[in-house]
Image 1 (tube, one colour):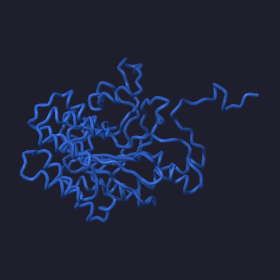
Image 2 (cartoon, one colour):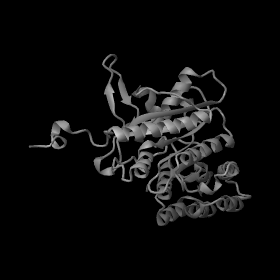
Image 3 (cartoon, one colour):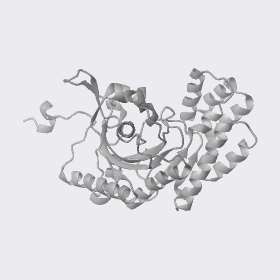
Length: 352
């Protein structure tokens, strides 16, 4: 007789999870502990809608997420709607629509499932529970440091040791292109080569498209990874040059790191000046979170000062999101002594 789990009518879609009681209790407990940590830090929970109008949210999602979103027609209006593929743009829309006149800093936290199409062979989930925060209003380095400290401290609260945070700033890369008159296709190729850490291709492209000094600086980004001394060396290297955006980004990272170090988390931060992912989304610092036992980032975030402005109201903002699935896996292994086995999305940074 055919077992139920093998019967076509008993199958669930690939990339979604069915949690049985023990695992469901563990996930709810994880969510509650994280949200409690955020609320004690002054963040208020919000609940964004599961669906949005595609034409409203698409301009702030970027083409990559739009292509991976699940859409359907609203029976009442015929307008296309989209299952939530990212939370941060929703909160940006909520602030612009409902809190446009509120000028005090807004501290929000959330737990929400996002849905993104992933190819079956990609090894990623299509349904991902994200838990995150958004700090809206402040534009200074202290706000960036606040969310970084919150991200590291919540992992400590969960008893997860050895967390590492990779911190970068897209302004470092962008500044090296100033005055070079590089065409957009070349800029994309440079960015892709840097993201892939392809030294040969990056060197060839940089020497072809940039003045020799800028090309040398571009190549050096591949080796600009380490602790605080990376920032000290970068400040020395760019001193007296006209790479304004680059030097501003390095100074900003230095200020952020100083504040994070003062809070006791400096040793957990890895500086990466070659970080270029998310340039269509982030306008300032960006970071990814890693923990022992998981071979990919379990979360991340950054500054996105222009996102809310796309809905008509400019508000500087910064934040991050954690993927609950790998955290659940870690806690399950610790409490049950066995792997969780549900898989995980391999991109945790909000906006990716």
